[in-house]
Length: 125
Image (tube, rainbow, N blue to C red; front, side, top):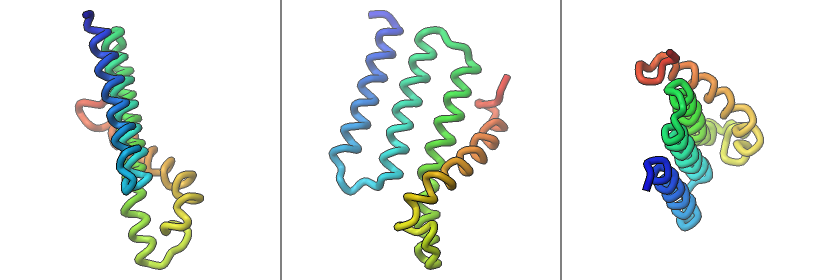
């Protein structure tokens, strides 16, 4: 079995395992489930890029984007808790569907992506 085939197969297994984990556990928060799904998708893309001989720049870009989106979705959880404790309905548990996913996630993603450009292993070359 070639290395590319082994990487693709293991990535597919990781993806299906993550999806089944999220599906089986009914008490999982939606934000955490989306973050796990993005983690598995970005790791599958990175494995595929490495397998087909992609450049290091593409791998770093994929890692930065994946990490930024994961942190953005996981960042919704404390923002929602803080907004509920301050009785701010726009970012609370009821308003997060409208405001959080269309306003907060892109803002946090851009901020984290900009910060990850300065991390030594993820710098642009």
